[in-house]
Length: 152
Length: 389
Ligand code: B12
Ligand SMILES: Nc1nc2c(ncn2[C@@H]2O[C@H](COP(=O)(O)OP(=O)(O)O)[C@@H](O)[C@H]2O)c(=O)[nH]1
Ligand SMILES: [Mg+2]
Image 1 (cartoon, each protein chain N blue to C red):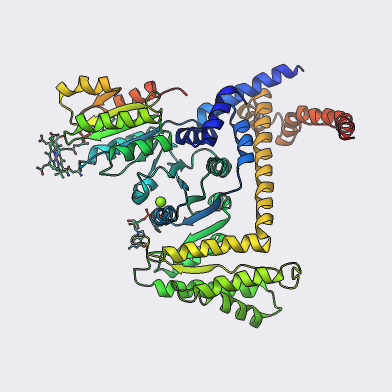
Image 2: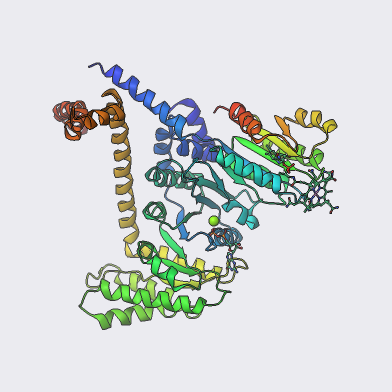
């Protein structure tokens, strides 16, 4: 028996294990004074049911706090839920914070909630990967995360 | 270790939060190379106090952990928190909500909170927790707190990673004390009757105290029921209830451990009687006393020499767990090679073979390797002997 063959099958086994054990980690966050949390709850539960690990920030977090949580928890996906209309000031602050910790590049940032069409290009320029407004299908959202979660 | 992991380790040791976060991810995912990384961490560990907090869901663990962290920070110490939540048994997914309760320390990067889910095998989770503690220790955290739901044996294993274990008991139901007896009681170094602002806290303290007395009686066998009681009395009495007489007790423990000094009194081996404190996690009442008790227990461990013993036991367990996991991996590979467990099981079902024959066959290449290694070993040994001379 060649030992090479043994090693091969063993490393193959390791990769299989790694794939199975690796689940997508997401932070679902509510930032600022916005108290609309139904959407964030709906998304958190849907992500959980899809097999993701979800950390929910709770209401009324400052951009810095969101950044801190995203960095410490080493999430693959940062979801920001905003229905208050303050996205144009809050989202850039979060993006800058991620940059500061070197986390901007390999974090998939999503924004959900009430975002007027004319504000979307600006957020996308900031580095937001996708925006999900009211009525978007949950399946579509989950599919997007599965396909775009960063490989590490 | 590859260059990337070396860089990661250097960044962690240099105090970069993201490097610590990424290291813990590698540990959780058992990413390629994580073993070498954890090995390398060990040289930088041993400075942190590790505290385990357990208790039923809703007992107030996260709220109390937040207050603990806040108080440690006020004292100038840095804190790492590992919060473990159960995951959904169906999907493997989880909503990790402990962080929500940790509001007063959020915004302070010197409190590093990491949420972990109970995914995968639970045996694996206690290893992952122990390794994540090592990462935080190497990073330089002074206090590391592990929060976990005190449900079963697996959680008990997790919390054993800690030097000092606190069990939270909400007041009210005598039932909760009854359930504690199964396993959790034995691991408690400090009981915190949290939600002491609610009715029934005094009674819960009383019940705990009685239970500890009964435990002592059993522990001492028939030899001195009275003596055991008296001892338990003078140790637990002053601590029960917040504050009063607590200093006395701390002094008592120190004196007892210190007095033996060189003589090391073999007649009465140092023993720790779990202390009981009342806390209100929501407003911080009793948290200082709680912290004093945690510290008193740690001093007791160190002064009495129990700490070294405990650490040794923990590492022995870690070594065993690692080896078990490694061997399991090897055997899984062998199983695959032998045709996979399902086909083999089917062969047993149809009467072609039996589990014993299969186990022997699957194991034989491994056993052969071990024999081969045993033959080679003497040679290796003499080589290293030669090196030494
Ligand atoms: C219910 C509701 C409330 C409830 C909120 C209850 C709660 N706990 O959430 C109450 C009555 C409290 C409320 C109060 C207010 N509301 Co209101 N509210 C709504 C309403 C009608 C529905 C929101 C909702 O829950 N939808 C259901 C959830 C499931 O959908 P969703 O949040 O949009 O989430 C979906 C997507 O957006 C996306 N998504 C959301 N988050 C995320 C995150 C991620 C990561 C991803 C991937 C996707 C995602 O996925 C979800 C599922 O498809 C909206 C109007 C509307 N149609 O949106 C107004 C609305 C949001 N409210 C509005 C206003 C102005 C207010 C108040 C200021 C009113 C006032 N003057 O007092 C207060 C402010 C409260 C506060 N502190 O913030 C405005 C906001 C205007 C703006 N953005 O410029 C809206 C748009 C109504 C309007 N047309 O004017 N509100
Ligand atoms: N009245 C009271 N409520 C508390 C106390 N400690 C925690 N709580 C509340 O109990 C609930 C559960 O607390 P949490 O920390 O999440 O418990 P955990 O599940 O054990 O982590 C929350 O609503 C807290 O605000 C306390 O000392 N007194
Ligand atoms: Mg909790």
